[in-house]
Image 1 (cartoon, rainbow, N blue to C red):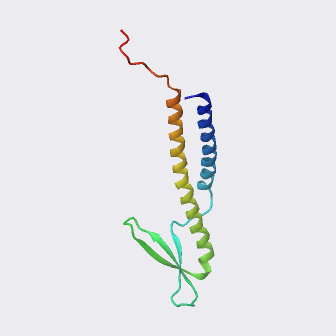
Image 2 (tube, rainbow, N blue to C red; image 1 turned 60 degrees about the horizontal axis):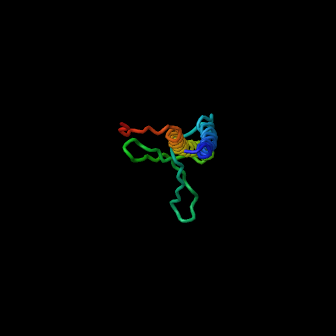
Image 3 (cartoon, rainbow, N blue to C red; image 1 turned 135 degrees about the horizontal axis):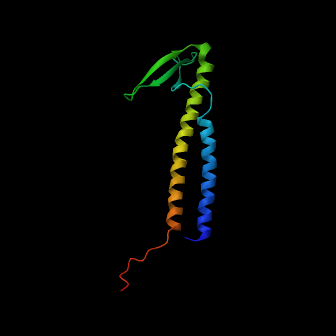
Length: 120
């Protein structure tokens, strides 16, 4: 691998690690979170909405819990924070895998080829 190709890989890694740093800051924030989704339901066609938390269970199902109207804004902020955290963690895993893949390519590119021929 040429020095120019190695430099291009290093540049990609620098960009990815910068992105990973931003995602880590998002994941390490101090905003309270609820590990749930906020659902809006209307029981009549033009009726006022009712809000429920959809809370996942380990069995793969979810439970719903009613949210009082006075608490909807707070719960929405907390569920949105969870959504942002989950998204950031998912992207962090993807970026980290890409960094690893590129580092391995750099390692392979820096290796000197060994001649295993019989040479006698």
